[in-house]
Length: 235
Image (tube, rainbow, N blue to C red; front, top):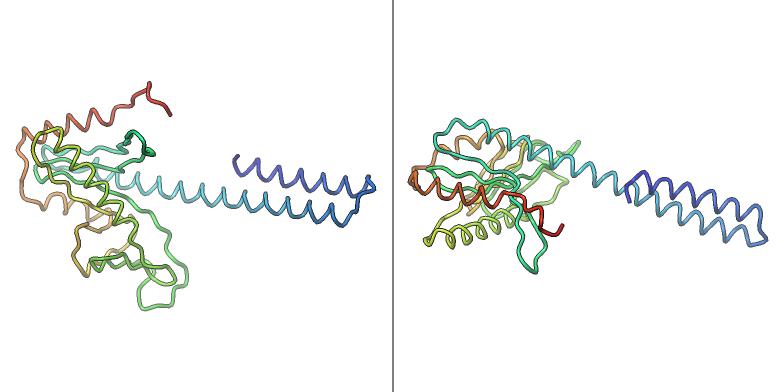
């Protein structure tokens, strides 16, 4: 049920409560109280739907920005894959935002689009986030966060295990967490690289070659197969 339907339900319950109070012998105070409660509930649900939709659009925009940066990479023998959907028996499907394969290795790139706070009064600037090696520190009043770091590491570990099994030898996958539109300052070093979209090309091009052309082609072909949509799979 989308937000328009929930607003319509709020109006319907309000009108129904008014009609029952005006044209029946039931207690108008009880009817109007119940009607007000139902109307308020559907209004709250509608507002939540609007907020959820806005957050979804923000996240989609962030993925598109990073995807455009990756597609414009002028790195030789490097390929980018987007929105890799993972389905495993007994688990809820999930996706990896981006995967990059090139001579410098395999990278899992997760995108987090976050709104900047308005009127923050702390020492940290409103457009700046800090990575201390353990967590992401946002400007006040936003709270520190580790969710994106854990997600990037988890997806990198999963893909490393998958590619290693397919290739019969260990394939390392580097996790990357990207915050489009933020100024990212790294004050510590962790297992996940944290940066903004503009820093991606330098990270990907700054790695020394660890994969042969043959390995890059093999892994790219495997990712091609994983990115194909299986129309026979259950939704």
